[in-house]
Image (cartoon, rainbow, N blue to C red; front, side):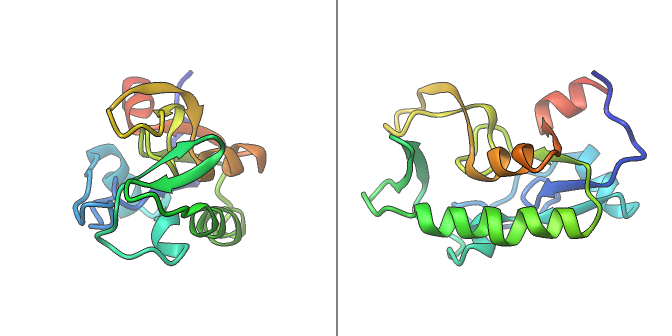
Length: 149
């Protein structure tokens, strides 16, 4: 499937070069950064929009809940940032597709970490990726988007 460059994208802010990852860093993706520069992409970080700090304790999805490595349940912050903030912003700005950070508990699509904090990957999707897909957005990761170009 080829990405359509005329679409308005919502993108993971870390892929746009914003330092909002759990470790305080970013994961810049040149293709995403180019879309932001040309006004075709809206960067969001659902975790920050949900009220979590940067940096923050890493989180993974376990048993349908988002749990930080220290055992804190952060599902509420992830849900708030994904639904009430990021998905609504995307729709209000006319976004029809998303390019989201692979394997993230917010943005992962197709594959996420299993909640054991051992690097084990399982089929699944992050909280924002699921909500964006359910809202009708086409979902890409930075890996599948750049492979399709």
